[in-house]
Length: 347
Ligand SMILES: NC(=O)c1ccc[n+]([C@@H]2O[C@H](COP(=O)([O-])OP(=O)(O)OC[C@H]3O[C@@H](n4cnc5c(N)ncnc54)[C@H](O)[C@@H]3O)[C@@H](O)[C@H]2O)c1
Image (tube, rainbow, N blue to C red):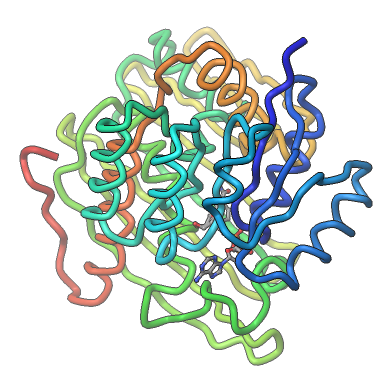
């Protein structure tokens, strides 16, 4: 069996998530890793040893890793503000790449990466993982099969405990810079993409309000985002994203889609989907562990098998990532101005 040699670019939280996913995929072998900060190499080596794998070579210059003949494809996970020069170097090398999302902090930056990928004929897949999460795939399948007719309204709620985010991004991390939106874009972009994907419609306008909480206990921030998006098919998709220090009372994920035949699809946490129709109730359990639950492992499997080995165009692309980024940025803008953000008819 041909194994795909993977190079990891960026050695933070998401590099660890992808590593946990990749070690369970027989076609994958992590052969190299890049971080411009050499102190991260040793820490990652220890982490890899704990998971039972070794990384053959560590690099501090991205050009060197892209030229490594054992590296067939690269997974790049660095903060969006710093992504463009690194991702451009990877694309110029001609190697297929999965870019974590958002792939830039501006829509124009995503356009430039997309243009470069087209010019160089390189397959670039954004890591829009919710499209690969088993629970959301099932939701999409139920909507496509017409079980509830046409969706008429959606409510989505996601809660992440503040202590867990503080372990993921300790105090001082890029994620806690309130002036650049804190973690809001990265915590909402996957749902923004999912809304377009599930509704198969374009957003018309978005309204949002963000309430921040100072969490001196962790040196981080809490947030409550209330957000509603009106789509061209007249569906209003309502979101609540939050992270604070309340424990034990909130479900990490709850979602309900109502259909025009009176039916509904409910996501009761990432482990259970319920379909309610005039014919009764059915449910599907998804007993999954971490790299699978939120879509990271199926996403990496798809990237390796279809995009890298079979050379297929990815089912989700940089244009989708740009639209999802524009919607997440609209959350920041609407909250700042107190007004709705209207999307262009070309969106
Ligand atoms: N798909 C998901 O579920 C998910 C979840 C969290 C984060 N993300 C995304 O993944 C990306 C990385 O997030 P993370 O949580 O791994 O962040 P992190 O802070 O844990 O790690 C980021 C990595 O980028 C490197 N880095 C930081 N500044 C840099 C610079 N100026 N130049 C080059 N490298 C630099 C760090 O050294 C580190 O190796 C972000 O775009 C984030 O939005 C995706």
